Image 1 (cartoon, rainbow, N blue to C red):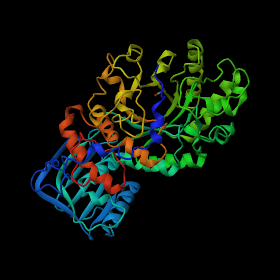
Image 2 (cartoon, rainbow, N blue to C red):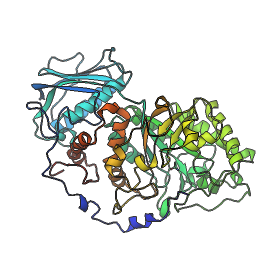
Image 3 (tube, rainbow, N blue to C red):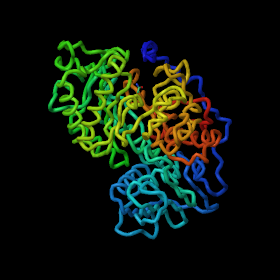
Image 4 (cartoon, protein in one colour):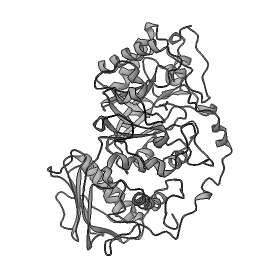
Length: 528
Ligand code: ACM
């Protein structure tokens, strides 16, 4: 049995030297860039994460952003975001102009770019920079790549000296998978809107396009539900270790959805059912089979709670909660958990999940569930999220359903990097950067047809995490590894190349103030 017990206590010891075993390998060379094509060490067509489909530098050519550079965009939001960022770091006016400038940056919806809505083409010549795409999502992705072709300082929040040189060349790019996600557990510890937005900015930089929010668990209910108000006000009042609770109002949630949407990220809300429900059971006695509400829970055991599957009120509750969440959520998916329902009899689980899934469909959404949902009958459109620790699960492989790959021993960002890591748990193993990177989502689960893989997701559970710094230290540098598995063609998969490209991200994170784990596996440039 997998439990998330024990090692949490070590986080209170706060070993301040968690990164001391990973001093920068200053003697290691940075990524090589062809002569005349580099805007500085680690900046160039061979330093982009995730690796593009095709990147061809033009030796000797470069474009320089100056006080004269203007920006045109067919997608106003994408253009404004990029211009704002450039103004902050360069101090230049970067005016947004009404037609593609002779000297400047053009973001254009021209159509005809192979690879779908998220595909883009980027061309840098001595005269300017052009990104072309079919949809705003593609322009957004092209801009994220362009940010990595700029000097590190371009992502500074304060004015830096420059020069602002972009190496010449052409990139053609599109994703391997349509679903590339991160998950944030706001239930074990609550993270306010500002922290969620901060994480959205960080994951969007790596072309992650879904954020799964784990909104309820035994330790906390984190979203206001009008028909069951005590869920948030009481069920959300605490957290693991008795830490402060909190919840999102509906306005908060809408703000997150909008902020994410402007960054090509769809929110996937999760209400975990029928287990992981102590916060709900504590809030409403009538949801318990014995009619007695249990106390709030602040530990980190799993599998002890279950909604009462034999009571009709349970199904009213589920339908009303899912209805309110569906009404707040423009994206297609509603995640209903279904994991670790160890306190629900198997027959009851199957009957309950059938009704919960009917509720999701009734509210016009597509079901996502942790992979245990294949034990119940699922509609053909249901998506199973595989979180196992082995490569063998026939029930999932043969279910005939789309699968999101989140193998815990590879993609769980809350696992420690090494035994000394001051945060995180170990039940799925230690996960160094190479472990997170060196697997193929398309061939990982034995017997699962490659075309059934919808994509990848990196979950981050928060039993031991309290702050944005904590989130960042566990997510970076592993999140970019998972992002690359989701985006890049598998023919680009190469650990030695990846670790050099990843090394080039270190100075960017330092510039952005992103805390990260200085893995000794990565040849970080000196000073990053
Ligand atoms: C899970 O880690 N229980 C999905």
